Image (cartoon, rainbow, N blue to C red):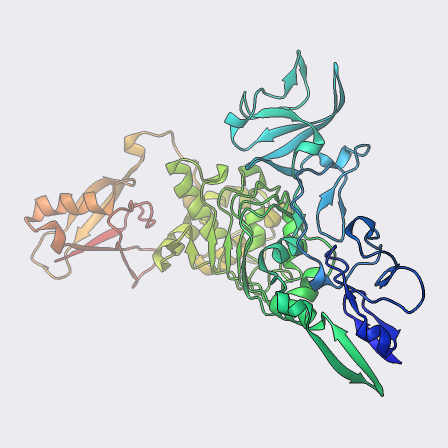
Length: 520
């Protein structure tokens, strides 16, 4: 009697030599690649019992899952309903009777993405409906109302639609998407490949075992994956990602169906070597308070959040990124938080001040002078709020309340770095008038001491390039030969270069009483 190991069913089977010579292959189902006929009258024996090997008579798929690497990629679901259940195939399906947790979910239909804002009945038409607000407002038909009743609200008057639950795609879990894209298909030679191995004293014939090892080894070695536009909506089975592909370091899950930052944490928590994460074009809900990110993203160096919909109301989320000590590059372009040229520049300065270890923001390097200017401006901008919360120039009396420290966790560190803001710096800003925005500056020429020291009033918004043009006319020197820097009485002995011609004097934190140094 010989022992037969069936890799498909994951169990040993006994058979005699006659049965071995009469092996019958069944190609009628991906779940039963081989049938081993027994010596008793009746149909042959499959991994799930006696049955015919004809395709129409194959048994239903068993409750116990097959080995992970042998599960073929499931068809992409055309629909899912609202209460999710993750099947062995990784597809999400819904119960038509449980619709509550559909709201807030991301869905896809014919390449268009949207967010479920309503689920329920829409009279007079019978049946269940989903109210979807589309990312592309041209895809919708209305603003969420029907026959005078408002069922949900949209940002655009034509951004909404009512859709049947079985028409939209609620996506797949992360691991299923990985397998759909990266699992190797078995070749014809793998189907018939057999191998005899000995376990203890028993000879074991493996069928399909090489395929299992190949699939598992391939996923285990993956380091960089791109799942862009693969309808990823959740992490899936707890621990499944860590077991199957633990060595991933770079992940692109842009333009998927991830609806919340919490779901991102569930995925990243299983990727202990994660270095680069691209979440662009996922319209997510970000946490309004503190979230456990330190342990989850301990190795993360690059985070991309372009077009994720992050708003000013979710601004406190940026504070949490300062806890990621490995983070060096952040991109958050084309979000409500950074829309408009003026707001974009202001937001850039705030992000730089809030995330101390950042070296690159929105693909632009953060130079030392830019960081210094951003941190000084931040310290000044929130100085009055700091004093009201209990802040004080005297270190022994400096005890701001917890609410302020939660909103500005780096403020105390900046006070230690640059000194606490003085009362003169914290005067209420006067109404915008040109005379209130002028800086009185001295202009010196270190390499040409014969030149008379000038005193000029210049707008703080004036760019370095325009200052050079003004000096070029006064000194009769070509603009290309001029080099500018400045000194501040607050930092004696330190000279700060004005190296970017497109930036303003305010950008470099030039203040009243500072001295411009001109060289050529």
